Amino acid sequence: MKKILYVILDGAAGRPCKTLGGKTSLEAAKTPFIDSLFQQSVNGLMHVVGPNIAPQSDVAAFATMGYSPFNVPSRGIIEAIGSGYDYKEGEVAMRCNLGVVKKGKLVKIRLAHLSKDEGLEVERLINEGVSLDVPFTFKHTIGYRGFLVLHDQLSDKVTNTHPGYIRERLGTELVSFAQNIKQGVELKKCKALAPEAVKTAEVINDFTNQSNEVLTNAGLKTNYVLIRDPGNSLPFLKPFKDLHGVSMALLAEMPVELGVAKLLGLTVIKPSDDFGELAKKVVKASKDHGAVYVHIKGPDKYGHLGDANGKVREIERIDKEFIKPLLELINLKDYTICVTSDHATPACFGSHSSDPVPYLITNGEKSKGHFYEGSVKKDYIEGKELFSKIISVAKS
Image 1 (cartoon, rainbow, N blue to C red):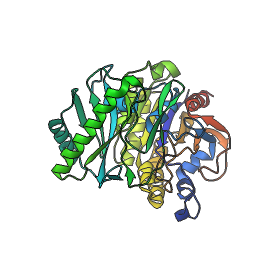
Image 2: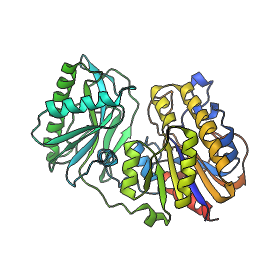
Image 3: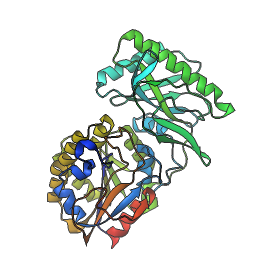
Image 4: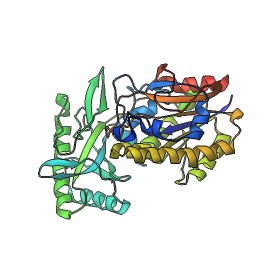
């Protein structure tokens, strides 16, 4: 069986943008090295979670590793575990965004530039200045991100206060769907979705009000904490190696991917900001593992900022500075490479969308042209099918 290199270009897929002459960012980007892989691949389109569902990063990661996206821990628990928190069953953990409120309206749902020191000051002020009916821990993680844990046996059946993620029931599960929002929206209260969750909603609203007062009085860049995707239990997850029969190393730095890796028993390797060094780390990891997962965040950031040209430049940089040296370090005959996105983040949309994403899996099959949404075959698969397809190709 060939070694597998699994390259996730976070949010690289998208929609045609006027600023790009009606092209998507992938279509507009000059990517000769990704194209060289596309021209010797089986390829198609993937509904990461399902048609008409705009996936979050956590369920997308599980799905593209072969797991049902509807039977996974909540985003809050995943991020807490990925940040090193020792989660205990029954605690309610939730993901937090640090935003800005003015005159009762949400004017920023995320701060593009928040330093580690500024984030730690937010953490200190909240933990010292907020007093709730239940013990809690608030932690800053990276940039505008953080998590909140309520140390009590409470229900997790509550709504999000983050307006960009609608929490609904899908069968027996609570699932969050991304939606496009504009700045300046009205603030949302946390609401109970079941009678037993009334206290949880009250505690979250109390936390929101108190933290808003503490941060406003401190005069910081951020003055509001948005919460989403609370959870209070860990479902059983079969280890990745037991599910697929292959060990996998993961190179990523965001808490959500690190949490997924810990929950699935993957080997975590610290990535490098230098793409050339990252390529070397990926190849080195492949010597000890059957598969290597590398998650590259850049395109998603520009998609959220609505910067289509910035997204194009980032995709081109990844192609030149990561894919090119990666291909120079390996003999492609010994590897099966998959390149795809975990979801679409169209710059003309500013958030995750339900658009299918393109994928390629190298197998020597001849294709022509440039890798983007419109050039791949119109053969649709679901995200949970992708890794099994990769293994099948690697074994052939």
